[in-house]
Structures are given as C-alpha cells and as structure tokens.
Image (tube, rainbow over all chains, first blue to last red; front, side, top):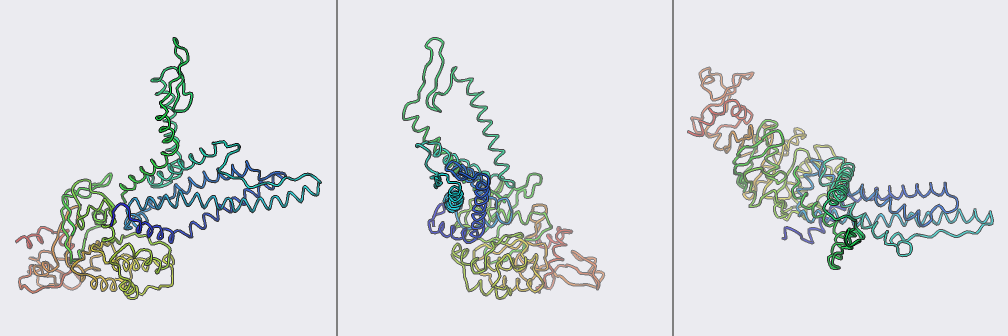
Length: 274
Length: 277
C-alpha cells in the first residue's frame, strides 16, 4: 500500500471526517445563513428603495467570505493544539498528504462551494422578499419600480478583473490562516492575523527601504515587470523583463501563493509533536 | 519488535531520557512502571511517533515511528491516558475506524463491548469517562495491531471494570503481539504482565520477566526476626512484615508487584545483585 497517497484510503478518511463533523458543518452553515438573513433584513429596514442592490450583494458576499473563510481555515487544524485530539488525529492510519488534502477539500474547496450556495439561497429569498415589499410600497406611492436582481459575484462590472483578484487574494489569505492553524497551538486566528501583519509590514519595509537602496532612482511602472528609472543623462528609461519571464512571474504571483503555503503546512504537519 | 537505542529526549526545561536502551519482543505483556513524571508516557509517545528522539533511535516493527507511515500506523494502537473519541454512536465508530486496520475483528469488538457491559444505544459523548475508555480499549484490542500501547489504562475504571480489563487483555495476547502497559497502579497489573520494566529518572532501573522474578525472589509475610533482618527488602505490615528474600527453594513464589516496585526504587542494588549473580 502506498505510504504517500492511496485513493481508497483517502476516500475512507474523507468519509470518516464527514461522519465525525457533519453536525458541526451543518450548524456552521446554518449560522452563516442566519447571519446573512439578519444582515439583509437590517438593510431592508434602513434602505427602503434599493436595500439589496448588486454592489451591496457583492460586498456582502466578499466580506462574509473573507471573514468566515479565514476564521474557518484557522480552525482546520485546531485539534492539533489539544493533546487528546491531536493524538487521535496523528495516530489515524492515513498519510500526512491524505490528511492535508482532506483538510484542503473540506476547508478550502467545499467551504467555498457551500458558502456560495448558502449565500445565493439566502440572497435569492431575500431579494424576492425585498422586491415584494418595495413594489407594493412603490405602487401605493405611484412611483416607478425597478426590481433588484441577483448579482453574479464572480463577474465584475464591464469585465473589471478586480473580482478575479479578490478571489485569488481570498484563497491566499485562507491558506495563510490554514498554515496558522498548524503552527499555533492556541488563539490561531488572532495569532495568525498578528503574524501576517508583521510579515506584511516587514515586506513593505523591505521593498520600500532595503530594495530602494539597491535600485536606480525611479519606481515600478507595472508591478514586478516594468521599472521606470530616471537617468540624469538618458532621462526616463524603461527596464522591462523579457515577456516569458514576466508571464512566469505574474502566473506565480497569481496562483502559487496558496499552494506554496499548503506545502509549508504539509512539512509543518509532518514535524508536529504531541 | 521494538528497539530503542541510546534514546535522548527532553522537554524545554527537563531532560527525560539520556541514553535509554530497551528491547521489547512479541508475545509479551510489558508492564512499564514508574513514579509520576519519570517518562513513561514520553516513552510510549516516542514509540508511537508522537514525539521524536533528540538523539538515538527508536525502531518499531521495522519502521521509524516519527515518519508516521500508514503501514506503521495501521499496525500500532495507542490508548492514551487522556483520550478523544468523536461524538458518534458506537456502530459508526467501528464503521469508520475498522477499514483503517486490516486485522480488525468486529466479532472481537462486540465480545469486548459485551464483556465490558457498554450500552450500545448511546453516542460516545453521552457515556461516562470509564465507559468511553472501555470502548477505546475494546477498539484497540479488536484492531489486532502487532503493537498495543496503553497509558494508564485502568485509570477511571471501577473495580469490576479493572477485573474485566485484566481478563480481556489476558485473553487477547498471542505470539505476534506486543502489549506495553504503562501504569503507576501496579496492583492492577500484577496477574497480567509477564515482564516488568521500571523506569526512574529517565533510565531503566529494572527489566526482568515475571518468571525470573518469581524464581529468584520470594514475596511473603514473615514473623521471623532473623529473616526480616536479612531480607532484601522489608516493610512492616499489620501482621508481621512483608519481605522480599532470595528464593532458595526454587519453587515459583507469588509476585507482589507493589512490594517489588518499592524495593527497586528504595533498595535497587540489593535486588539487582540477585539477578546479576
């Protein structure tokens, strides 16, 4: 039997995890749905015209996704902080890779899918309710009524790629919190948040203070790929990375952060002691 | 089956093992005795791969435990002192754990659950600590792993359960299994173990089979003042003195594990001299 990954064993492990946690997951999703209902109800009480316009829906989706997604990710390996649970977890006859992939499946993939389904289920119902109330009110006041529509949270207005980057950033942020749940024994969310901020500040300091002292006078014209230098003799000079290198760098910046953090989590999990 | 060589291990402020050597063979029930904080649980965790040696090596079933390979994990079971069981009915616990252990026997599990008198209808969280522990012990035994490690298994068990525990353990040992039971409640294991290993200050103070002990030592109550004076170890009791003397007759005496433990800790050299002679 393969000691690194065995599909049958992984499926068994997934089944075991589901059986032991299904009640907790059901309650968590119900709580998320309940909070969304409360929030949308609050909006309907405070804005009588367009309480659930598309912008509000999208903002609600992403704020909720970031908050609940990172919070949930910070709890994925929280059992490793409790001796008896950690022993139960580490002694289960499955490989570290299988355990990590199971955590990613539940914590990253299925959480995202389920959150989106819950959001749309609540959003759909609340828009129907809001349209019903507002159309009646508008009719009484003989005002024109334009019903609110369900937003597509994955497509930005006029093809704006911001939404796409928001999603990429979400998965990266969630992976940071997943890693934090392996690293820290207690208070995973707070500690990861603080550690993440410290790392971010160090990076900012590095880029602005340390890196600047090595680079010629100027600044990045396009992030990571084109540098605009001010030369006293030649004037403004553009230094551009070769196309292939730029493409690779941008690809890595976009897609590699989350998988890299998963790899770090794998090695941290391997060296975990109880 | 389990080879520990030159094991060094310590926590941040405390050294536990400094060069521990120990070999455990299949077909035996080992009693790992020692005071609180002498490293019994730490030793079991090193064997199970939950802690990694800082120096030296631990080899269990040909594996390095710290690598936590599934092939190793499916042939070892640890019943920790403080344990976790998910909040599921017993049938689900079996359904979702058994496939991970190739030698698991549902018949055996059902037999142990019946012997331990566990109600099947409750989920595990609704059971008492003792009942949950008995479920875990039943699961561990039914998995039929080559190595079964138990850390203070009788803690939290009532008098009847302790007796059931001894009966169940005695019935499950075969030539392919090695059972290691760590405890400070030595009386619970007296009739069960066939090898006594006493740890103190991170080193093996005493390691002998029960056969050898009962052949070479005699445990009895004495009223003879000369015998009491010459005894390897003596302890006043309500009637006479409990003594350990050399077994000159050659007949096997009845082991008093508690007395032996005290003798080893308080007067180990005298006892050792009998076995080294």
